[in-house]
Length: 246
Length: 246
DNA sequence: CGAGAGCTTGAATGGGCTCAAGATTTGTGG
DNA sequence: CCACAAATCTTGAGCCCATTCAAGCTCTCG
Image 1 (spheres, rainbow over the protein chains, first blue to last red):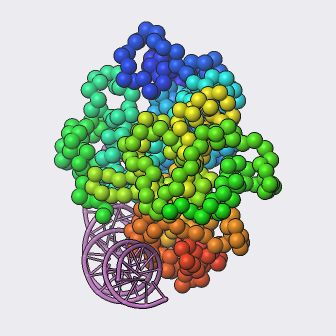
Image 2: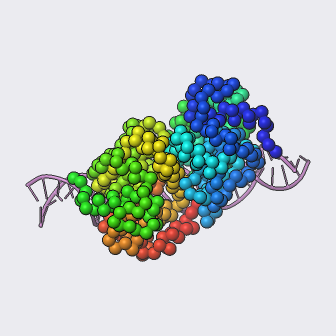
Image 3: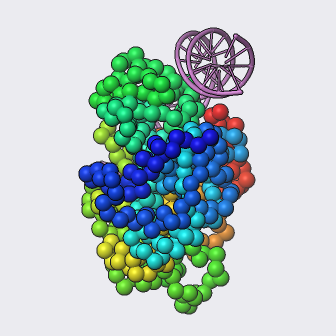
């Protein structure tokens, strides 16, 4: 049912400090400096979700925000005709579910067995009002999200299929929390399905699969259990260059 | 050099109250309620830009944010290979140029002769720290931007060319400040070039042109000076349905 | 071990791109 | 105000990449 407690706690400890200070020297025992989020922790509630389980649906009241402790979440948009788009993936450490409006405009689903903490929106907003630092940090989270969205928009609007797949793998490699075991950074976990990846990249599962296969044949990556190992970062960066439109 | 002062002042007066209260009953003489932005106005500086002129470039220090008084602005991303993407258009009333980082990740250029106000970032952040309402409003602006970005991502990832063009026209019609003269809402100004539209929609200028032509032939829209007139909103909403992928 | 979901691979199709040429609009200077 | 050049926009023909359709394979887990 719930994920193994040891791992979760370890990740949570690393994560509560916020993602911004990843570059700082690690202080495993206790957090070095107070994070703007610390004040919120008293309001946090943990909850585990199974693979595929819905966290919230489009249209639901947006009265909470969430932080990923372990696993992963997809933000999904559907239209009248049943077409699907995965706007974002949220990985351990990411905060999500903040909205300007009262209702969700996307739904959120666990891509794997996942543990989240949620905070009541009223508490978050009250704390933000009192502690300028938290308000500022929340604004930063939103603006970073916007920046990432701009990059995804460029990818969707201007990059060829091969480039999209390569960019996705590189992004996942960069965002992945440093692998606890064997942290050479080359092993990238891909908890989501091909359908999720395809719907995120604006492609079909077949096209994703074909491009992954080509990368494997080239020796640029190697397939692993539920992910890939990056063998040649440089080749991956250049993959599909020239295939481009314009 | 500068835009005609009368028009600018009129728009500015309407605009300083913020976009959120468009639905409120119009009080032409003096603003009814204090907007969270009012406190900022003392720090605002006006500046006019000519068509095509750069407001800021990618990499520049992000030490200001801007509000559009008249005209329009495009947020542009370029990659190594010269491919271009227009992430957003900013229209009168829109606030833009807030960043999480210290440097611009996109550049901004006027799509027409344009008047902006800018506010020093330090002033904005200091005020946000003091006045919770402003901080909250800025967060809302960022989150609304994120929501709009998600819609654009869906468009780029999952919609066919015709649908993209139709969606763009409908969005412009909705966002356009109520036309001062002849405000039947059907006349949509398109100050940007076909290249801008194409680079926003992830298409080529030829494809944009062809779809506009088809809409004109169908009688769904009619071409005007530098824009279009929407003749059949319903048909425009359904345009390209069935052309879709999946 | 069996069933179903997820993934891979192949062949054919088509929507949007490329290349190309002409029409229209905009801007500028005489 | 007009003429000319440059920029922008439209239209046509052919091609290519990603999709579609189809079939077989491989995990997962009950």
